[in-house]
Image (cartoon, rainbow, N blue to C red; front, side):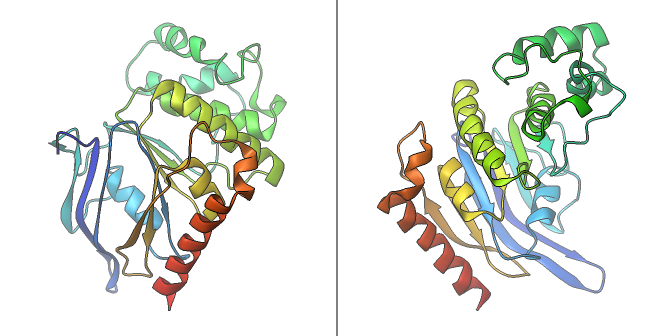
Length: 252
């Protein structure tokens, strides 16, 4: 386990009813690796993220980070939900420092930590702006800055670009690919978008229907940095087809 950043080890979870959701989900993520999770609607992707992030306890199984048991712990993870959840009455800078302040850092120290990230996140000059003054893509970058500035071991992204229009979403995917490489983040992403999973990932975990488990692990052996024109290549199309076939087979 010491050679991996994150290990998801045989997770089981059911809700009252009974409603079994996770049925032995298992995979690992290497340091600096970008792994996506795809699966049919309602299969348990969000439940899996809640368990990994320590927001829900599994009925069985364990989560390890850097070789240590992190089951039920939130501190190793920076979690970005689908909505940006920026507070309209706070400046962009003070939105990005919120998590640090909640964890006990002074506002001044939190601002000093967040400010250097504004330039690489494309937000320089907007520190004193309000969220309503930002575009959708800028709001998502601010939300991601708020997430990563906490400097946690693993970054969890839950459909972060799902609410954006197609063009902005593509721009954000390109930006995320570049900035992730610069900071060497270890990332686990939930997405319903197969193309997004291929474009951003080193590997993709395909979940089956509920109660879910990993049905296939697909390696994305495409060069980095990723270029937008890559999505029309035969290699990219073949990976999309492999994921689509795996999803359909799991839903049959």
